Length: 268
View 1: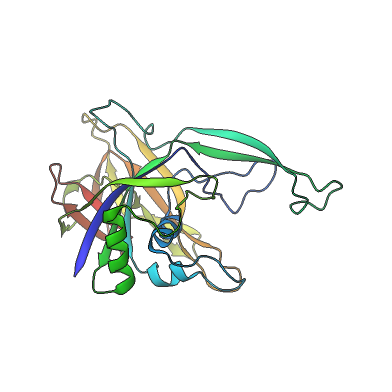
View 2: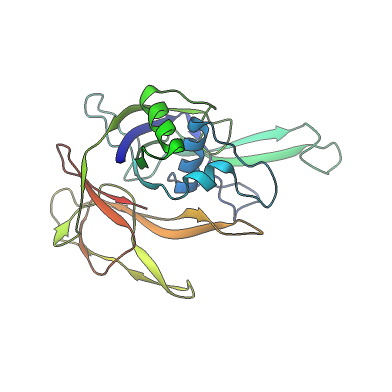
């Protein structure tokens, strides 16, 4: 039986390193992406991480088919606190020296590192789990009881995190007809030829209505590609409060939450 579990994750810092950056500064993704979320879930469930070159970790092999939804954490109206500005989290550059002697072949073995780092990142996550599968049933129990086998972190083990506001959420499948909004991150376009061109899945309705004010875009990982390099597979994502209209079919599932606001979420 499928259960949709919603929970909020918060961290003081986060560094979701982009693999295509090196010098002079390591850059971070702004949004939490699916492979990173699966790593967090794997730590909570007690599944093994990367152990051997050329092999995907246990957590990924057992959880990769889970459908997830992700959104930046909405504004806390009671505390009047905003966690992001139109989808953008505050970032800073942190510089430090690695003097273990193992990080650099330069004389003295000192590696000077500069990393772009997220400040107080916070996300609301949705995971669709099957309680008839042992690992997923175990994960449901641990999420609801706030227990983790290993300490979860946001991108690197310096950036520990915890989760709160965990609950099972009712939902129904949503057929994207007419005009609607999507509250979560969603895949906005698909490759149409050798991954060099993209065809939009939605029309944005620039109607000037109140509450239509911003659009955020980012290419984010959705999976690991196969051997031997296990590089990321990317999709183009958007996060917006504009009204949308569906243009063509997509492989990704839409659901409507049975909550006060009837939010529409994309699972991927």
